[in-house]
Image (cartoon, rainbow, N blue to C red):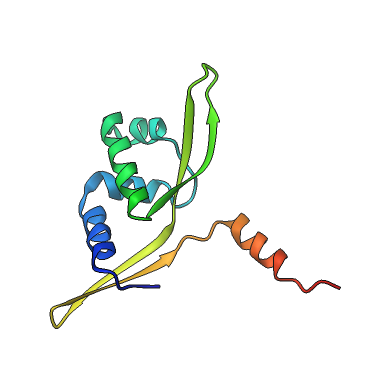
Length: 119
């Protein structure tokens, strides 16, 4: 998918320019993770993790895929990267961004199952 909206391009470029955002995107490609898990795994202050998650959600780069409660009753969300790959090129003064969507196995199965013709 080619990104054409200028504001969306700027958000993507800002995300991949930031070390913490890149770590969050990379960590959540395969498996959803919570903010505390990301903070602990990458030694990122928890407030920074929540701020980056908010920015990435607003940019459409990650999404909460599951919510739950910890054993002590606190709510949490698990986040997953919506993108598998980002290709950025610059030619003749134009920035071109192409994104490859991160299709989770369950999403593929659901789409396959619902596309089967009914008999």
